[in-house]
Length: 353
Image (cartoon, rainbow, N blue to C red; front, side, top):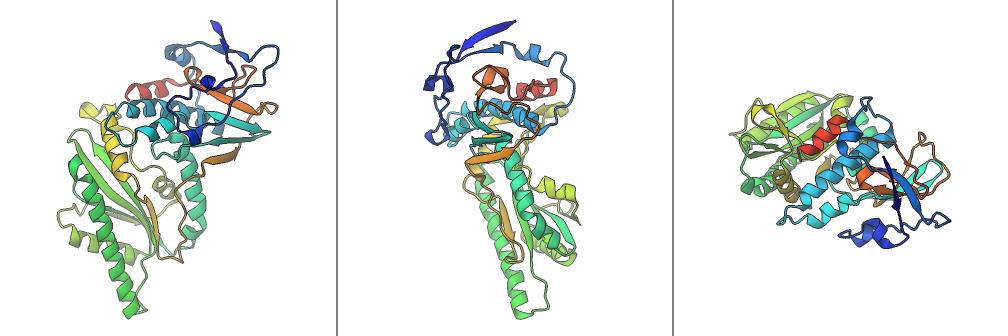
């Protein structure tokens, strides 16, 4: 069944309630004889899932899928009344709602949220490209994991502060050694802060993932870390050679959205995620050291981003508006930008939020 939806040319058509002013883009359809009337399918999630089994791997479909999941996650996070990030979560709900198109180039504004799948994809790509040359120039680089014991929620912020101070003390120790003896190796690499949540024990696990130049320095870093965190598990610390897959994983996320609960059921712990994102607010997630040998790259994505999508068939329309209940961007003539329909796995994912 298809229904006719009237898309009037005023700001209410943007569903702009609760959106921060900097994220608003004017969506003013060119009103012709049809007065902006568009045709879209009024389908529920069960209907959308029927008959859709093929993987959706083109960049524009991946973008639509990330938007679908991120918007559902943002709505759950917004419901946490005490969260200091409520406004930022609303920004994620509206992230990239309006797209301007010029041929195969799509331009939109983004929320820059660390919990936003759309923004994280852009951020990951920017970081990989930004660090690629520097990381390749490192001699025999190693992937290092530095952990502490898991902790309760109220200790998370202080633990992150303590870990940063500890790492800085260690880095300064290596720097002083090199200053006194230039034959000593320099600590060169990149550090990423990550926090995971254990739904079974209701504890948080802050840790560092690093890429370090040289096995000797990588091993020495772990030794110094364990000397300052003697209760940390030796087995939990890792030193392994870097591969391309590891580099990609390093830049992907600040925490895992899905975790396992009792019976190995996968869940998304909304309150725990909010606590993690709140504790990480204002903190630098990625830090390069050994500069100038390793140049630092900004984590932030520009608010306005332009991206090439050569797979797009529509090249004549210059503005698209995201319509939540059809999970796609639509132009004034009712055409869909991506044709995305949630797979059953996508629907299952948001049902756990």
